[in-house]
Image (tube, rainbow, N blue to C red; front, side, top):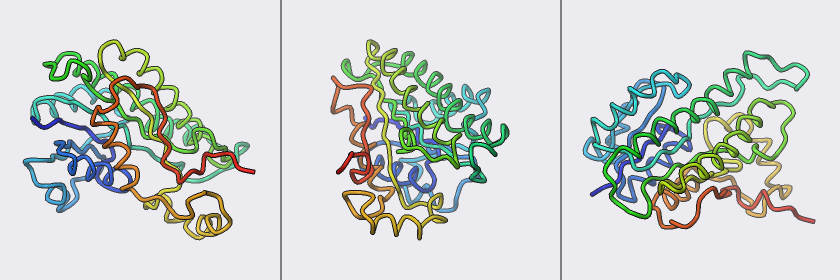
Amino acid sequence: MNRVAVVTGGSRGIGLGISEALISNDFHVAVVATRPEPDGLIDQLGGPARAAYFQGRVDDVDSHADLVSGIVAHFGRIDVLVNNAGVAPEERRDLLEATPESYDRVMGINLRGPYFLTQAVARQMLRQEVRDATVRGVIVNVSSISATTVSTNRGEYCLSKAGVSMATRLWAARLAAEGILAYEVRPGVIATDMTAGVKERYDALFAQGISPMPRWGQPSDVGGAVAALASGAMPYSTGDVIHVDGGMHLPRL
């Protein structure tokens, strides 16, 4: 029987790459996103027998119970949660000029929302029939190289991703005995609409050797990593960080 994965922000960019990779690995996918359903998306993901779209906001914590119930009503269960949805600040500002409004928006979507959605989905995983005595479920949090790399003109984003990293470890420790694994996937510079506005800057940085692999990452690179983790093929590992950054995190002389 096919496993069911929930992918937040799964309709475009990195999220779409994740959704496509999971479909290619025989998952059923519930795509959760804030915008109205894009034309042709479900057909692109294999049709309504394989994928379904659920419109909702990750930062609307009060809606999480209904979202989980709707997904379970459609697919019967949830085996994997991929917390991918995230935003950058609408305007990059120096730390001395940052606003509480931007901080609250970024933290609400990037950290607070996924934290409580994980809570709701983990409760569902613990309620449903156990298919695999070793791996009961998998949580994958998509963070960013910004979890450890400083950008002083978007501090709220860096803090949110550092928080996602700790949240992964917290859920890994709490859920390990229940057979639910938690991982962090930490992308580097990935070619999406979010990074399109800084293309020239990063093209130059790649040419200067910012990464051992001299190219942009693609959503499919992240999708492949997530699909591998979601498979449950590492049942004695949890809380791990998987870098998808072309080696950018490696200290070099």
